[in-house]
Length: 378
Image (cartoon, rainbow, N blue to C red; front, side):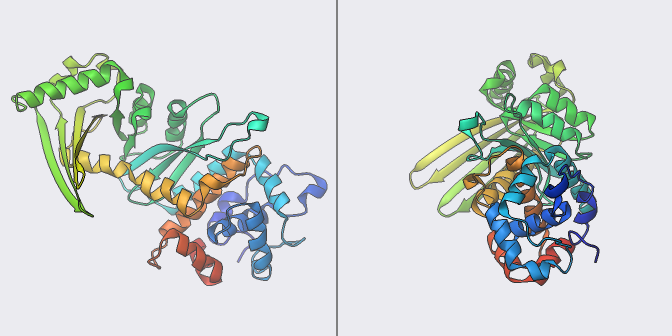
């Protein structure tokens, strides 16, 4: 086996520029990356934990790493990842993801942001970092990520992320923050489709869509081209009924102010969710715009699929990887540590050999070197 990360990760990360000079290069960059990725997979959540993992596994790691000066210290890990170019690191991550997976056409790619809450450094005027990620629902993979600039927001970050992804034939979903004309145009230009959530902050667009549905429902959609779907679920004493209407009638364009500014817009969607519990009944109505002209059932599936980014990515990062508790703050280190977590999560999610949650898979990887190699090599 060649020296470096087991499996095909090595070729994608070995080209990262090493800006260290002289005595600062006692440890090979590829060794540092390999130990860091392995340590994160095996339960380490910070640089001290990664150093401890390396020391415990040093003899085994020497089987495929050079380690000319042994295991780097936690300070070395911290320094290296604080100056490592995050854009280059993310590009290497993207290159690897694109090789190891084939995006299923027609699947939902949910795009959403998450704040790493304790990554702030108020003493130096640094706010907590906010990462926007693209999550492939069916493949269960993080496709890419981008850090939101401190003086910006998700609105400007999302188009940049979409431009580096292959989203041909896929359905991009966002929450209301992502309902922007540039984002819709970028999705269409990249060969994808979109379903974008609406909220009151969209002004005329939200008002026009809501009023159009109210009028259509009042006349039972008489002479309005549309489809309808309904689902019902009962879990833990709670009953949820979801109704979805998708208007594809081309005449709706006459009722939307500024319609011409939304590239590819072909349908309007309303989802009504009624929840019954022992304490009462509640109802939530949500509205969406979409470039798709497909039945309401598919629209409803895609809308529900968007929230997999919360349950399968953000929640897992907080619970299994303790991301919100991380106090890594210096320079580029928080962003690069986020990439390390995404690499680890992708490798763990893709393994189907063990019917365990992410937390327990990390434990098994720490206990069983063969299983860890299996995660890298598939």
